[in-house]
Length: 616
Image (cartoon, rainbow, N blue to C red):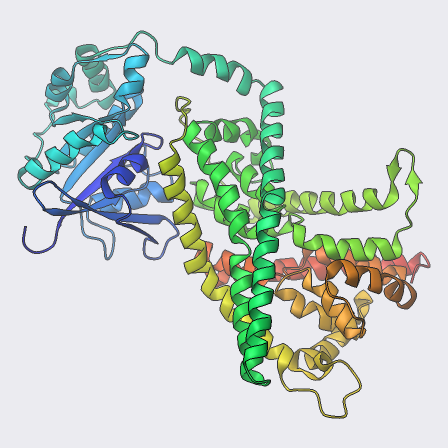
């Protein structure tokens, strides 16, 4: 074939096995990007047929109709019709349908057929259909739909050979489907006619699906099962990732130490060891959490459980202006907001996705814990209140305040947004299935690369900028204070003290807030440096700092700083992720602005209230 390769578009309803088929066809010869101007993912791969001909294969976002109800469906419609800027229309459509759910999937297939493009119907999951006793007359189906039909099993290599053979032998000369007869323009009626002519289905749903759904969609037992599942995911993201993150942290520290020894002392050595290597470590250290989280999300989605979880929670989440699909991203943000925000890609409605992204930083991530431990240990007495420990109750209250604030903020956004319409959650509950390891691995590879390529560059750049602010100008030869006090960051901290004085923050706290933008927990070691304490790690810094700040700060200041850390967007990694996932500096600025305003207002209220009670 000369010139550009023939463009094949895989298109179909969500949960039809389209992505698994795409992985089979293209293998590692695929790339993931975003469509221009939107956050919808664009997947394109290469297929080489037995004849040696190469084809470009596009995996379009799942859609139920060409009358779009979401941004994903709008992109699919525009690409298919050749209206999307910078995106050539596909030459041949490969419509993937679930053989166990033809009543739903054939509706979209008939809409695609009416576009008048060469098309083949990939009858997927025929193995599952046989197990359920569903008999499909392929010849009759082909005659009724009016396009070629190829049986496939996306999780099996053998299931795609016939499709590849059809593509290689017929794609270039595929005929355009004839127009629908005037008597059968009603799509629903035509689907019924096709099913009557070509399909024998004992039951509409599988027995095992009905049995599981009786428990997993139960108003009580379903929520308990979901709570247990989410608890296990949260524990895994936090516990399983910690050893790997510690290993990355230790490796980064050793590499930075080696660079500092090899290079002569000076700005170059500091830039490489404290800026570039530390910045790369700040990117890679999130990777274990991201991969573990997405392993669970992909497994739940492939198994058919994720749509059911969204269905269970949609009503209560909708009351706060969110979606049932918001639950997992928000829960994930308790470990770290970066993977939590990235996982909002499972939310199809762009309005709900944006709301979830904007409130995810309010979830109390693990990086806040060193700060909480320091301040609670310094100002909250370790005594019992009934059956509970007072320090533990305060920590629980900080978590609860973050959750309550997220719900209030999302509710306010719901009231203020211009689009007042309710967007009902329309879900297909697919059959339960066992996820295929290959598809999980491909999905994890894509997630990891998206994070490292798209988010990593911004985090690295901001980390180097932060290093510059902390390193220059250098301390004079006769300096008596820590070097950070003489840097641009130190000067900025002293200037900030005027603004933050109403919150009870002294200049030492203000300086510590600046490196804390790299990661919240760095504020602890920064305070140790500012107070000239020797502390090799956060635990040692907490032990050394606790008596110092307990003696030097008032209780009102401690409570104010605790409240500040509930709200303030201190982590540049989170802000970088918001920018990449929304594609908008405006939304990033809105998130930063409202979080700082909340942090300042609430800390001011707490500090002044505590002083009025005589705690200042």
